[in-house]
Amino acid sequence: MIFFQIERMMKFCFLFALPVLFMGCIAVSPAVKRTITAKKTDAPVWTENFRSDSVKNSYRVTLTTPDNRITGLCILKKTGEEWRGTLVNEMGAKAFDFIVADDKCELFNVIPIIDKWYVKKTVAADLYYLFNVDNPRAAFHKQLERFEQNGNIVVNYKKKQLLVMPDGSVLLMNNRRNLRYELKKIVEIDPDKIIM
Image (tube, rainbow, N blue to C red; front, side):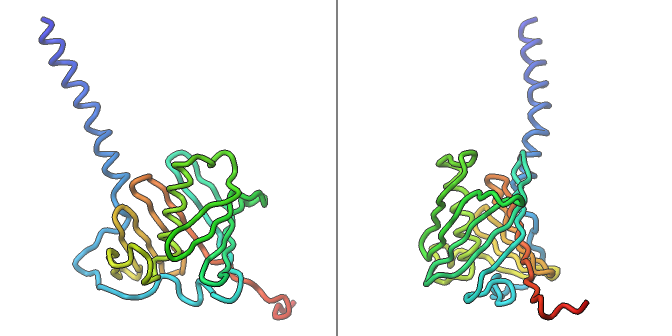
């Protein structure tokens, strides 16, 4: 009798755990899987239209976590050999500042809600990958897989996938931590060229 109950309980646990296992696999899979129609490419992610070395760059940012969706602005400027940036929410409150160099990314002035070592480490690694994906001096550069498929440029590195869409927006997926960063360039409008 006890053996029958244990066997029934094991079947129930297995049937319950199976969908959870498959959902976990789905969450970790990349958004774009390479097909036979994909073409190898060396096209850069950061074109002059999307990131300027001489002026301030502004992006609308959406950060999606398993539990939340955060929207805001990212302001980025090149200073010497480093990229300096800040991330603010739509109300103007700063989330953090960052500096991305050839060999690392550091976060500064981090708000208390994300000021945990493992969160900062993950975000810094993601930003380092995002802003150095075209840098031949980056540590991961030789391990990248780049291809073009359905008008999108896709760059894979371990459990990270970077997707450049035809509209110019960039989507970074950290499939290990189930994080998504989406950046859309904000086009600066010259007030002198507006016709009323």
